[in-house]
Image (cartoon, rainbow, N blue to C red; front, side, top):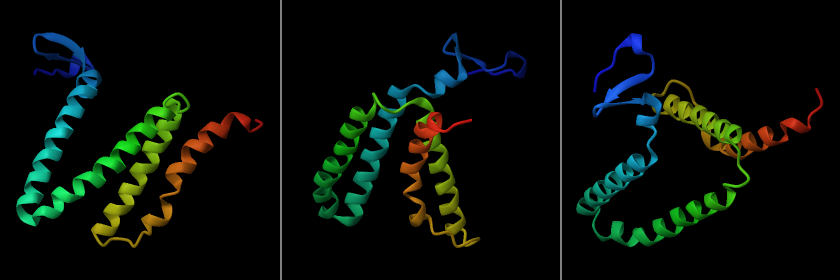
Length: 131
């Protein structure tokens, strides 16, 4: 893969020019990679922790499956700005977790989890406020 600063966001990848964002945001590649990472992590945990990992697979399937199905139903309602607000809020929460892990600041991140629901609701209610 070649990149030159004078070409902007385009890169040469596999003989054809594609946008760098599109090359990095290919959802099929990300989903496939996540499956392999989860498989390797599960095998590693199973070798160390034993049968408990195998027994927890059913619970993980139910929880993650219900979240995926719930997200599929919300697809018609959720807009791009709502997703962006949720991602930004999640980034702030992860930053707070980093501060806690590094012992720099005591941030009560668990108290801020409802903000993940409030952020898209505030974006949805934005057009209702008078200017």
